[in-house]
Image 1 (tube, rainbow, N blue to C red):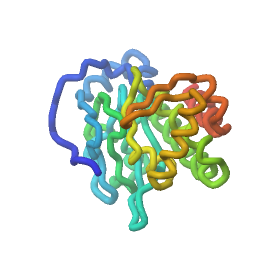
Image 2: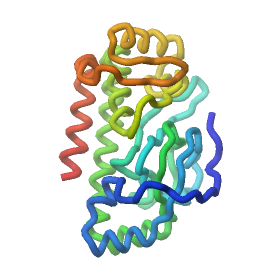
Image 3: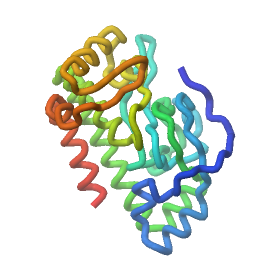
Length: 242
């Protein structure tokens, strides 16, 4: 499904302040944290963590999207996503050093990363960073909880619209690549169901979807089809970001 995290250091064209956590740091803390970061590209399918493996780095995406997926015998289901609003490696904040899920790059982008030991020290010595990553972690918990309820109670089309909106929010340009395989993880269904849901949205003139490439044609219309979970999740992030 994905490739392991290659140790390739390609200079990023995106500044670390495109990540909202980093951008919110005050002057002195911002300088200290940036000094500990290094640019790291996020090619699609790159595995950042495997479930049960030790976390080596924390990533602060500046574009693209990282997907956390639980892989079981019956298939794989996405349990959460992280984009430029957040960071990966949350267990380190909670005094653990392993990820419970596989995390891989769903949509290509860029990031800045910090090794695990440096992250722990940086959180201890930078109070604003500590507050921001803690509140962002709570927002991610809320996202996961909302997704559980959403997957149980809402129609496939409304859930598909919700996930497409969340993905669209994190992309800097259109169209963007989102294969049926990824959509099946996001929605917790098999590929034929994805074809049906995407087809409904396309026939309604809300998206254009061909060969895995998606263009949001009618953003307002897509928001109208999406369940309330989209706005609830967005409001939670906005409130917790302050």
